[in-house]
Figure 1 (cartoon, rainbow, N blue to C red):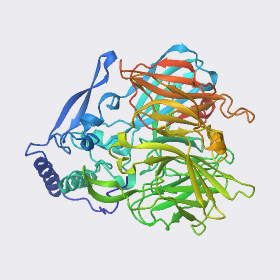
Figure 2 (figure 1 turned 90 degrees about the vertical axis):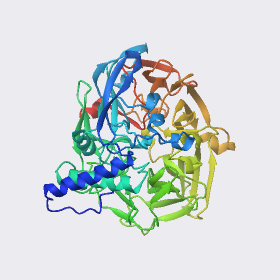
Figure 3 (figure 1 turned 60 degrees about the horizontal axis):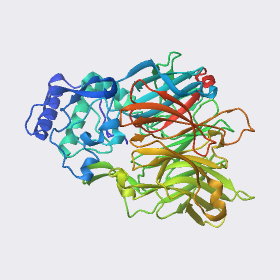
Figure 4 (figure 1 turned 180 degrees about the vertical axis):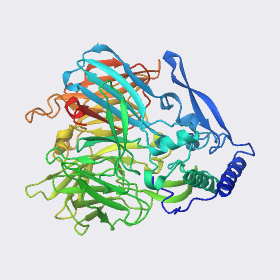
Length: 569
C-alpha cells in the first residue's frame, strides 16, 4: 500500500559488473527459494472465456514466485493463486471494442454514455502467495449509444504495468500478501534496484501503483484510482476503446498518493480527498476546486499510528474520517510477512473536521468500539443547529478476517449519529443482511438521502444480488430497512451496484427515479451480462439485459459517465 522504495536514494549510475552481480545475487536468493531450480520465465495458458473456447496464453514468472504449493487450509486458500484466481476471478486478456447483443428489453436513453468497472487482473499469474487486491487494474467499459452497446476491456497502462511487461516478470512485490521470507523481500528489492539502474523502472518519479480500485470524474478529467499512487487519467474513444493518458500530479501539487474514494460535492462541484501512509503524518487531507485545482495539504498529526484509511465521507461542513483496526506495520502473519494486518487491541475512532480547515486544530475524534468501516456510503448534518452528524456505512464484523478469510466477514450496514454538542455517539443496524458496496443517487452526496443500494455478500467476495434500503424506516422503530431486492439466481453473481438517474438535471425528480446497473456473471455457463434494473420497482425489475461477448471478472468499484461528460474529457 506504500512505496517500499521510498527511502532508497539512487544517484550515479552503477557500473555493469555491479549490476550483473546484484542481479546474480537476486537470482541465487530466488533459486534457493525455488528449491535450487534455475529462475526462468514460463508460459501458461489461461482460459478467458470457456463458452467461446478461447485460450489466452499468459506469461507467468517463476523468477519471483515459488512453485511449491501452499498448504491446503482455509487461511492459505485466501492467498493461494490456484484458489484466489479460480473461476471468474481468473484474469483475462484485453478485449478491443466489441459489439454486444441486447437480449432482453431496451436500454434507456439516460444510459447513453459509458459504464466503467475497475478491478484486479494480474498481468502475470503468480506461483506464490497472492491476494485478490494485488492485481493490475483493468477497466471494463460498456459504451452505450442509442440503444446499442460495445464492450471494451483494457489494462490501465501504469508505470508498473509497462515496466513489468518490458521485463517479462513481476517487479513490485504484492502488498497485501507481502512476501513469505526475508530472502524474497531482499530479492524483490535487488530486482527493483537493478531495473532502476538500467533505466527500466523508477518508482520514485513514476510510481508503482496498480490503478485497480475505483474511478472518479472531476475537473473534466476521468481517473483510474489506487490509493498508494497518483491517479491515472483515462478517456474512452467514440468507438469505445479505453486509452490511458498518464499519471496526473495536478501541476506538481500532488506529489504523493491519493485515496481511491474521493468525494465530489454536486452542489459546490468541489472534490475532497486524502492520503494515508506509513510515516507521520499518517493522514493528510486536501481538496480540489471546481476547476480541478488542488488546494494545500492539511496534515493530521492526531492519528497516532498508520491506519488503513480506505474511505471517508463529507457533509456540507465536515469531513468524516473512520479510523478502523486495520494497521500498516511490517508483521509476520500466518501467511508470511505482510504490510497490512489487524490490531485487535486498537479502539476504532471517527474523526470530524471542518471540510475547509487549513489545519487540524478543529478536528475531534470520537471513540466507537467495534466500528470498523472500510466503505462509507454517505453523511449529512441534522438538527436545527446542525449539531449532529449522521454517517451511513458498512461495519465489517470479524475485521481480523478482512484481508484473509473474507468468507467469514459480515458487512453490517449501520447508521451512526454523532452529537457534536455532547460528544455522544449512537448507532444501529439498518439490516441483518450481509451488505457491502453501498451506493446512493450521487446527487445526494453530503446531503440527507433516503435510499441506499447494496450488494449482498453470499459469502464475500461474491455477491448474489442487490437490495434497496429505505433509511427513513430506521427513524421510526429501528426496523429492517430493505424495501426491494433482486437475487440473480443460482450460480449467478454480480458486484457493486451503481445508480443512474433518469433525469440527472431535474432537481424535482424523485431520489429513486432511475436505474441500477451491474455486471453479472453466470458460473453455470461462464457467461456475463450487463444488467439494468428499475430502482423504483419493489423487485428491482429487469429493464434490459445485455449479453457480453466475453466474461467480465469480478472486481471492485464502478462509475457511469454521461455522454455529455464524456465529450468534455
